Length: 121
Image 1 (cartoon, rainbow, N blue to C red):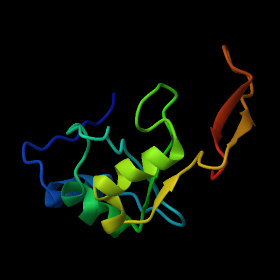
Image 2 (image 1 turned 60 degrees about the vertical axis):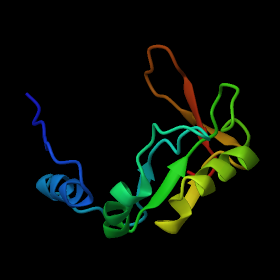
Image 3 (image 1 turned 120 degrees about the horizontal axis):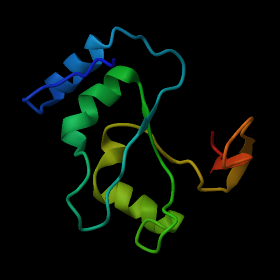
Image 4 (image 1 turned 180 degrees about the vertical axis):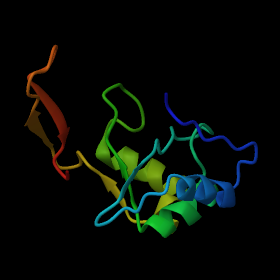
């Protein structure tokens, strides 16, 4: 059985409380994977909400270009969306496949023998 954490109050403070409830400590580089959101859209975590947690973690916001057509499928457009949505104001940002991808072997995979990830990994 898994433990589920819940809060009815969606605030920066409660996000930090939820993280601290995990009882873990992250060392080294910390990647915070989010969706930077489509340009003109509203379905993404706002920097004002996640900023304090990302700063507490010393995190870097990471993203990858989308495989589907849109305004995040090219690196230039994706960086513009990241800037327009305010993420550089709260943390360093990295589009992990900005300069290509690498293949990582999948040992014993049922459907895959390798997985492609951004070269910044």
